[in-house]
Length: 353
Image 1 (cartoon, helix red, strand yellow):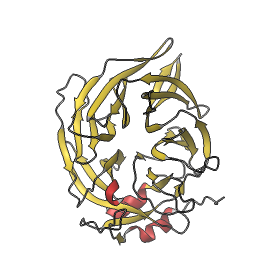
Image 2 (cartoon, one colour; image 1 turned 120 degrees about the horizontal axis):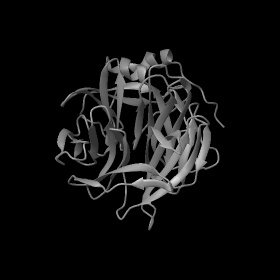
Image 3 (tube, rainbow, N blue to C red; image 1 turned 60 degrees about the horizontal axis):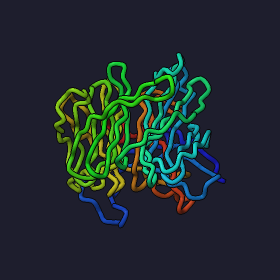
């Protein structure tokens, strides 16, 4: 078993500004601007399963005590892991093939504030969304029911607006289903869906609650923005296209981080294992560069990322924010996938933000 070592941010910064050749999984040089190199500080380790099929993470920290923090991570064969921020397993829920995971805080159940966690599930003959309650007092996660869907869910994210909580499910058929979820006396109550449509297979999505917007990744095309207001027109605004320069198909995970009064949208460009970053300026999205996660002295780099997540502000050992990434193959355990965590300060320095 490996010893988990948290690489100090200062050490990681020594290599952070060096560009790396942008090579895809087959070693083909990508024609884009050089991605800047950063290293992971923490990785997850599961010792009870030799074949974790990881996909999507979600980071949480207690705003009153950011040292109390966890990361939810899906295993799209077996269920949902809850990791401590040293990478060890805190809890496992055997929910089946869950794919994308997200959460929203402040969900009141029986008079108690909980964190509503949910994950898409594409089990054969049992498509739907698994719901969970995470208790911020005990850091314990429990099952909260299952929403069955007549379509196969693929990507997933959550949102909150005007006190209402929303589930957002994307599909391989190009549809997006946005629906409310509330705590009823007998469990969760789901509202009628608002349906948005794009032209081909979708997966990653993220809701910017503060701006009332929804971003959706169309894997072979690019990514788009919708107005998140259920009463708004369902037209999509193009943000960026797969050009095989800055973004190489597939477009996978999307996440947003807030730092020093700015908001940044970060994208998983799976085809070349890089992460383009865009500064959000109202309706404009200004490309500020890309980064890649390379091998460090203890933790290997990251390739072919599906899901990723960002946490803005202090969380666990990261005083100014952190990013979490699915890694297609862990070098120390061939055939095993896991999640890597990166100090946001290293990315910020590497890109000169």
